[in-house]
Length: 354
Ligand code: TXA
Ligand code: MG
Image (cartoon, rainbow, N blue to C red; front, side):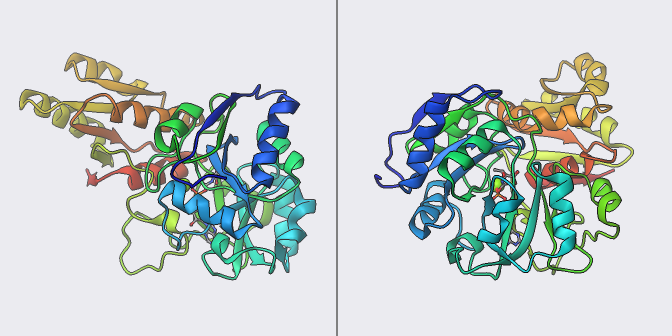
C-alpha cells in the first residue's frame, strides 16, 4: 500500500440492497492487504482497516488526522465474532447484542490480546458493534476480519452520510470508497459501556436510551450531560466539547424562546450585512421566509428520525453555502432527539440559552 496521505482513491458504486460480489471481494482484498476502505453503515460512513493489523490501524489515524488517544470502534459481522476481540462478556451484553445487533449499538467491553493498542488507545477496553447495512455485512464476511472503523471524516468534522462527503474529506488519503448511497439513520451509533454497573451511555446515538432501559433496566448517562460540564473526565472523546463541527461557526439556541430569538438575530444579522443560514425545521419556515433568510431544511420537528437522516447533509450544505454564520435551534423530544441535541451542541461554537 502507498503512503496514507498519498493514495489513489478508487470509488466503486455498490447496490445497497444487494451488493455486487466482485466489488465486495475487491474491497475485502484491500482490507486484507492492510489498506483503507470507506464503506456505508446504517449510521454514517466508516473508514475501515483490519482491526488486528497494528500498521493498518495506524494508517486510519494518519488519514483522518485523528489523535492517537481517541480509540476506534471495531465492527464485526455478528455476536459469534465477539470472542475474537472481547473477553469476559457479561450476560447483559449478550442480551443487548441479541436485541440490537446487527444495528446502531456499540458496546464497550474488556478486550483480548488480539486487539492492537492503537485500536483501544492503550486502554483495556474495546468498543464493538455489528452494523446492519448489507454492504458492511458483506464486506465483513468477505474479509473475514474484524474491521476497525471510525466515521470517515477528518477529525472533528461533521460525519459523512454519503460517499461524496467521504471524498470531500479524505480524497487522496484512502484506497477505496464503496458508494452505497445515503446512510439511513444519519447519526452515529449509541456507545454503551457495559463494563460498568449500571451500564453507562458514553454517546447518545441510533438506539435511544428508552429502548436500552426497556431491554435491561437501569442505564446511566453519566458524563453525557450538556457539553462543557467542567471537570469531567472524558470517558469517550466523542464527548469532546467541539466535535462533529462545520467550518462555519454555528450558533445554537435552546429553550422556550429559541425560535423567536433565532429568527430575530438572523434578521438583524442580515440588516448588518452578515450572511446567516438557518438550519430550519419546517415549523419555522414561514417566519424565516417572511424575513427572507437563507435556510437549509431539516424537515419537521415531528419526525426526528427524518431530521437525523438529513442533519449532517444539511450541516455540510449550509457550511458550503457561503454563509458567514449558521444558526439552529435544539429540537425537543425523546428517542433519537437526545442524539440530535448532543450532536448540535458539539457542532456549535456558541450555545445560547433562552
Ligand atoms: O455509528 C458509528 O458508531 C460509526 C460507524 C462507522 O460505525 N463510527 C463512529 O466511530 O462514529 P468514531 O470513531 O467516529 O466514534 C467512536 C466513539 C468515539 O467517541 C470514541 O471515543 C468512542 O467511540 N470509543 C471507542 N472506543 C472506546 C472505548 N474503548 N472506550 C470508550 N469509548 C470508546
Ligand atoms: Mg467520528
